[in-house]
Image 1 (cartoon, rainbow, N blue to C red):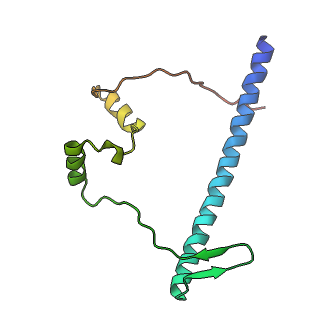
Image 2 (tube, one colour; image 1 turned 90 degrees about the horizontal axis):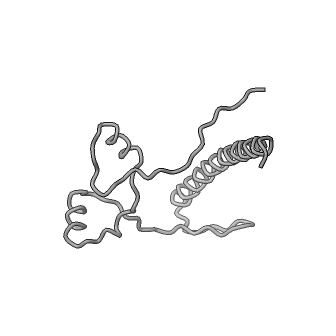
Image 3 (cartoon, rainbow, N blue to C red; image 1 turned 135 degrees about the vertical axis):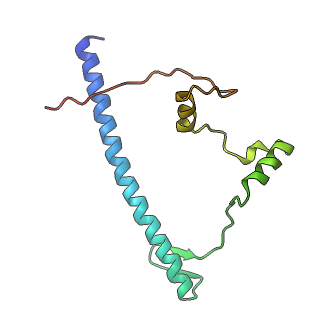
Length: 126
């Protein structure tokens, strides 16, 4: 590929990235509106002592849902160590926590610095 072709590829990547970020912002805003409307609908149904309601597009029914919540992390960690039930936790490192320890020159057993390709960029203002 020619330098001109590579430069166009960089510009195409940048345009796609900017478009994605705009779309993500729009999606985030729509999600906020959706959550607020859902919360208001739940509160309104409860206040009216109604368990379901039908509109022109949807029937909404108030349901109780069980969601896990930890009240004692020490007990949970002790259980996991004893039973090996590590599937109770998500298997993902917190990048910022690891990077902070690396900055303090701390070694974390079982963790290594995997090198990945990335791009540094600066937008050219026209």
